[in-house]
Image 1 (spheres, rainbow, N blue to C red):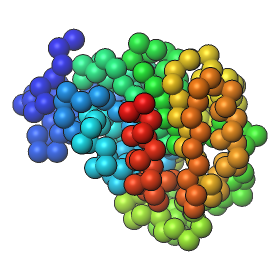
Image 2 (tube, helix red, strand yellow):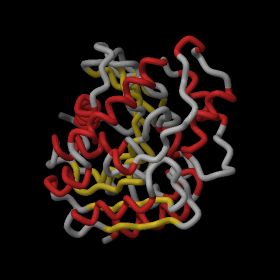
Image 3 (cartoon, rainbow, N blue to C red):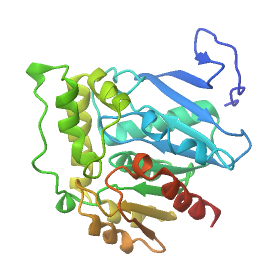
Length: 281
């Protein structure tokens, strides 16, 4: 496949915003939003967000990465500016195949995949499916197995009251951040713009994927370089569970003091420093 020009002209097959280097890729099961930042010839980082959010969750981190990397982010199907899958199914393996197709479409042949939270399941499935594409993985507050899940009492969403209010969204998302951190309004708006089916089905698919086989066992079989970053104030996954990834040979385990479940927003500079040290090594 011929890589697209960095500033291609819009045509009937690809909707491009030239100024911001954004694209909506029409793929087999729906349209996928992609954004690229940084130099074309730099090593590629693929950023995959978690459930109930979008590529915008990386906004604070991306400017810290683009001096040395081509940064590619996607909105997973049903999230942000991507359409729901045509079959309305959200299995993690299908999400990974969609991301894989997008990388092929963009002419990307090698990436270090960086994922936050449940995005780590899609990243792992991508590495399982495409070892030729994924060079290494960085997982940020990705729960290794369901025995590490501690957020059992969060405020549930009611499909009969959809879309939810700001207050309902913030109550639902509160444990996604350290105590006292205000959920950004942009993320509140994006969650509310999702369909209830997209929200619930994607979260159920993530839980099913990690329930079938814990992530450390999957990554041990994948055999790729791995960095795990965990905020030590995570209120969704037991912070000490980061140690479960030590079964992966050579895995680098990093703790961020004072950070909650989303250090990419809470502590972007510290997160970027760890990530860049890993990519340099």
